[in-house]
Image (cartoon, rainbow, N blue to C red; front, side, top):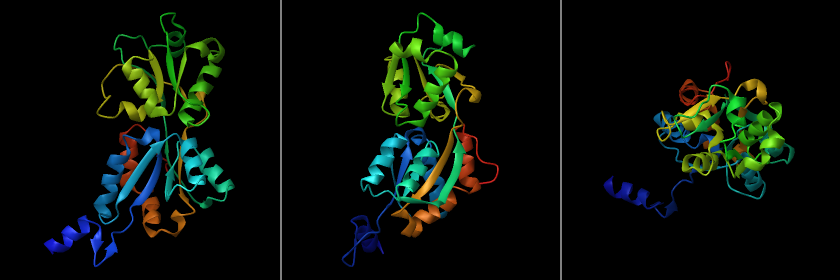
Length: 253
């Protein structure tokens, strides 16, 4: 038994390679969520090894279209899964809405006044504002919509620092390269940022709903492990993880 476990750790049993991992592509707003989500998944499926890659949803779609071996894609919106469906890289029958995200404006400075969103953004002392790239990151698109609704997109455009994805937006803000940043509430629920700085929830009325969808790719549709993971996303255990990180979860999965 000990010898067999050693061989398994080396990826070889009777000359055969160990089972391929389940490769999951996840939007960057899930970077703090996925470790807990995978841990919950392993409580009932310890035999399925999960490898997760993160990025802006649009960038991950481009990778999948170019052959990246992801079986499951967790997007920050529904448009990018739809893009895979349109491209023939996924089927609409394999789409699951798993959470609704929340955009917040955050500063690492505790003393910053966040009592009114528009007032904070108009402050002359505000030098730089970080947002994710609206062209590829749904949270960045929501930030742009928010600024447009407030009539601030054009006047504040010179102050914008555009990050590749929402994780980099957090880095820009936390490092001081930006005074404030439009980030995901899930980032503020992470151990690294919990209780730090000042923040305000962006009213949902200022941007399109942040409905997040997961989909099996064409590669994943033939993978039993991928289908098991998709079913897990509907489970109470998964819903509890998302709720713990500040997401709304669908009433009926």
